[in-house]
Image (cartoon, helix red, strand yellow):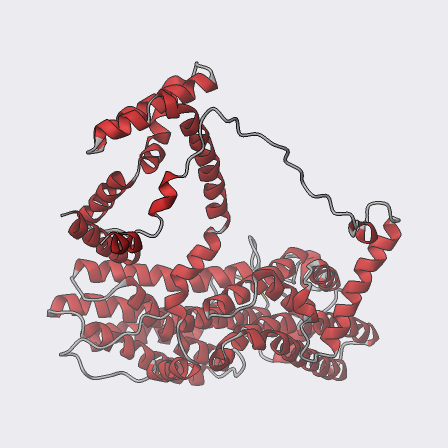
Length: 228
Length: 347
């Protein structure tokens, strides 16, 4: 009977344990300081600014290569940054500046418009992929989408060079080809990075807004005509 | 008694998470359970009201006063008040104070964190509406062009937002394309802003308006279903506009407008008809919807359609003067108006 009661209340004995009030609770609290200072090798406080910037630029450039040669690696996802997207976005917006229509009036793609399209577009795509049950984090997706604008930025640069030489049917055909190829490239590269994080049966639903996003940007690049 | 109340509280909490707490007795039960549970939650409830009345006193003193109040409150509410009164007496005051400060810090931190993660919470709320498969989306797109002639029994309308949202974004892209080729110039604002404003404004505005009308005439439709219905109805618009912004035959546009636009409108009308009772409500609801839907397609086509022909000309840009968004004398509009005049009578 007593044993059964004991078994039914296994912690009953613990309630009797108490600390008497006349014993002051005191002692030394020492935080163990790590003897091996591993921080030293990673300290960036006293290195030259040039080195810091160069290291970051090298990381950005490394990711550019990943976009240009999109093999299924997680380098773009693992250590994301938004410097590359910012750089590409500003470059694209600057290149699209000074179009025919906005010299006298509004209507051409303006700096702010490009900026807003790129960032809000990526945010919407990211939210969409989250809603569809993707496992990628918010900034990882922003990073991938931003870096994958690079083929289109290159296409824009090519278009400006082509437009210097003239604006006839041949020039339009060249631009059409360049923009189409870079559009396909962007979509393919971003899909290669993003698709793994999605549920396999819903890839099409995630890819569609990405396709639309790069299509709008590609369209802006194709319809750009400089002021004369 | 207490266990059944707890079960009821749990059930109401379970349903409250979905219905955002519609039953008043549900929350009452919850409070009852919380009051019975512990005094810490009482302190939390006291937090906002008791802080204001002791403004001029020192912080320490204020805390002690609050403490006494809480203790009194706890003693009043608890059934076994004698035991708790002794526990919350002067002896346990210091421990209580520390606990309360820690609790307040924790509460403040939690509030900050919850504000920061509000975005993710909202995503979780929206997630059920995006739970679709590609095949389902494709089927719904096709079904949006097939009117169902069953109006005696309420038709099924899927409450889903992925398809509608993507269709609206597609329409934005198509409109941008149309504005570019037509050389539309907008004085205040950008092309992008105008396109987004037009599409989302139509989708949300007309859905809300029709939902309001449906509420007035007692039709069985929810806001979500209305959004989904009208969103999928935009598929016809996207198809028509994509074709007619690139192929410039007015005849082709009118044929597509009547055929494709008409089919998608009929589909929505049939769905609404099956969920409404009575002649006048049906006429009002479906007449308004079909008029708005057909006119919107007409507006989108003519507002951003390029009248000067040739796609390449506008791509080369500056040689033609940019068009203004002013009323133009379009001869086709007259025939359009005549057709429109005949349309409501036909239905």
